[in-house]
Length: 482
Image (cartoon, rainbow, N blue to C red; front, side):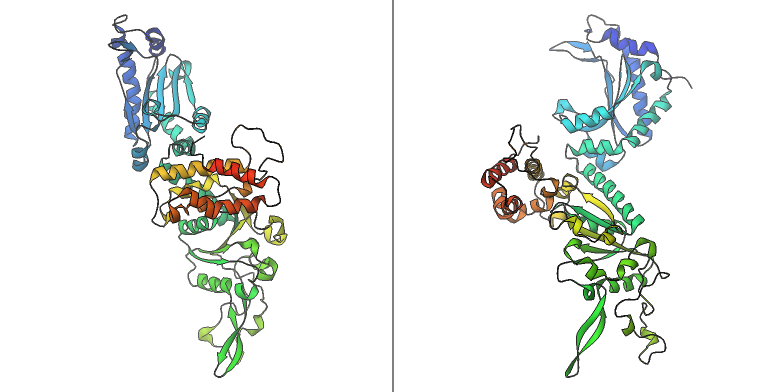
């Protein structure tokens, strides 16, 4: 098949660009077929499911009553996904354009309709820009150029949605969330054990539940604390009333009971979520399960005797009941369909305090504040009380500016070391804190009741606390998107 464009097609743009219709009336007839060729690419993309928008007239408004030839002709290509397409329409798109230098494919926004790129968008735009110089462009058939644009969407799908996210395209935010969750889910599936770690309020527990949900899993959540021990988690003796007397009976703990449930439904993944995993005394809670939870020792071939193993009736014992035999009577093992997700805040207790034997049995995933800001767009996270979009946008801007100030990256002012806030990203404030806005419908109340006291605790023992709190408050009240 023959190529779509010729070298003379591209030369026409340079020859007629900026000239008026009166100066070069023949330009209309010469340029229109070139414009139609770009339209053919759009036609091919529509057959693949994309939506396109293109103006095929070479003349543009050059002032009152004046028509001029454009130096650049472009078409807007929108994604195949209907919901995303509808949200992006006349806002965000992929451009396929022609000028005297060849063809350009890039992500862009509709500036003339008020959708200006910020610095993040500009960076994405030029990092993904794909130019096709004239000497290459003249080699491609229409079908090959259609395929090239289709491949551009595939290659830069994440970047397209990151670009669209900056314009609050909710469908793109969902897509990015799903992509990020898929990565975390695959890390869990590959390692069986996963720790989600990060700053307070980043929605780690919420995310853990979302991951379990995406796996179609049954899940159970427990929270570790200093009083939580082996008897709560694995098994132990519990007081029971036997007639008029009080006795003790071996009872399964939360994890062992969960594993028994998993063995009754081996076709379904089971996710055990441990909230605040680093707040418990890990070695005291897990005991010999250090062995049993290791990803290399999962399944019935790797049984471990628990501390109360001798109290479980076995075949030959006088109290053994075959109808109610304990599946772990010969030793505990972790079923192959049981996964563990732990969550922890870096600043609640030093990460180094977690037993290294435990650390090496888990994969680790850091949850960043900015990555989880998408919670604010999730209807479920607001429990049916999600504010209007203008409030959501204001919350995001306040949150971003406050968190920038926490790590001394807000404003242009040069500060001395004693005047700097001096905190790291581990102390930034997550979206969960801002979900409390619905309790008050007032940003000052949110600050006074939840944020101010937390920041005071962060800064305890440092100098100039009042001045630092005031600077943080100023950043919090900055509603601009910088």
